[in-house]
Amino acid sequence: MSRLRRNPRAEREAMRIAGGARPRFSREASLPVSGRPRRDPRAEIEALLVPGGVRPRLDRLSRGSVRPVRDEATSPSESTVQTRVVAAPAFLVAVVPDAPGGRLTPLDRQLLGAAHLLAGEDGAVLVLAETGGEDFAHAGADRFGLVATSSDYDPEVRAAVVAQALESLNIRHALFAESAEGGDLARRVAALLGEPLFAGAESLTPKLVTRPARGRRIEQRRAPPRLISLVADSLAPYAGPVCEALAVELPTPEAGGGAIVSAEIIPADPATVPLGEAEFVVSAGNGVSDIASFLDLARALRATPGASRMLCDAGLMPRSAQVGASGTVLNATCYLALGIAGAPQHLQGITGCEHVVAVNTDLHAAMVERAGLAIIADAQQVMPALIAALEDEP
Ligand SMILES: Cc1cc2nc3c(=O)[nH]c(=O)nc-3n(C[C@H](O)[C@H](O)[C@H](O)COP(=O)(O)OP(=O)(O)OC[C@H]3O[C@@H](n4cnc5c(N)ncnc54)[C@H](O)[C@@H]3O)c2cc1C
Image 1 (cartoon, protein in one colour):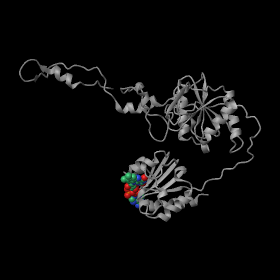
Image 2 (cartoon, helix red, strand yellow; image 1 turned 120 degrees about the vertical axis):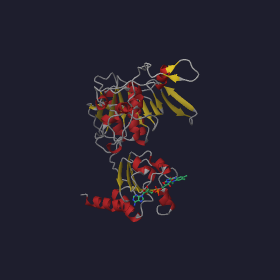
Image 3 (tube, rainbow, N blue to C red; image 1 turned 180 degrees about the horizontal axis):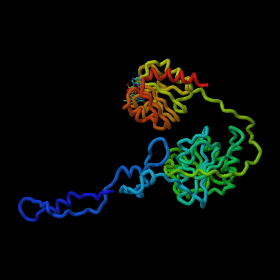
Image 4 (spheres, rainbow, N blue to C red; image 1 turned 180 degrees about the vertical axis):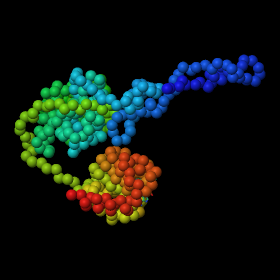
């Protein structure tokens, strides 16, 4: 049961005996009741927790709806588990993510956040992706449609399929990533539909979309049109309750290929790919003394080798491998840090990494705190063990 909050100052005033040179207090006096219930910070935090995700995230925007007092009848977990249901959407807002390899990029997640701003309570957010597999429900998809093409890479066909889906479902807005592939697709779709594209939007509300122009000296604004492409890091990803991600039937794409007859993906060599573009980086720090074993591990994992400044200063790794504020800022999906303490200058280089794994002998190292998964062990023992495990892989 929640207790009422005390007000010591009011209580002291009530006990004070009037008159006299020095303050005197009577213990017999009846104490005033504040009437305000005590706060329960633990329950408040529970109520702000966004369900799903690997790391706990708090939705501080829903502060107004937080119950300030513990309600014994409902447990906190019961109150937070909820699903966003849009049974009969008044309109659809489509998101066309890049999703390379079927995985949503940070920008794709920001598109979903932007789409929810446009959809509000009445509309539904529809993700038009080439493959399923990613957890679209947690990322904020009310609906999900497959816009698969027979070819791995055929921008013409993909644009035609997306344009057909947008037309057939009468989409109110469609959001594209302003990236190399997403930007190209958005322009092709706009040309096919004969509609203007508001490219490179930096802010978005249901009433207004803006972008900079003429070297950022001008800000262009207008009501959100149907086709918009969004630049990275301009809006927050969706952080609301889990969505339904109901499958939507799309019309069968019309037959006929584009001008590209054949295309194949030639995988880049991770050893030579620039650090800033690498998908998977394995870095060594001062805790790694066996550099040969480290390079073997990077090869076995098909990862790009990186290093902390300590190793580069010592000449054990090239300067181009340095990760951090005065080295390279990574854009990798996964970062494996071996024997790296996690100094602020180093952590600045991995802010964009989605998954961080740390190997360190110190449980309290900042890198261990930053990591989603940590191995508290000697890196010199972990490296050969990992190589052996990879060799055993069929
Ligand atoms: C202006 C400025 C810019 C900088 N820019 C950068 C930058 O861009 N990038 C950068 O990296 N640094 C940069 N630094 C340096 C940074 O402050 C740190 O000194 C550096 O990152 C530390 O490197 P480290 O973690 O490898 O070494 P240490 O700080 O020595 O940490 C070694 C870690 O390895 C662990 N360890 C020890 N033995 C083992 C073992 N056998 N197995 C597993 N773990 C073990 C230890 O517990 C420790 O956590 C900069 C500094 C300045 C002043």
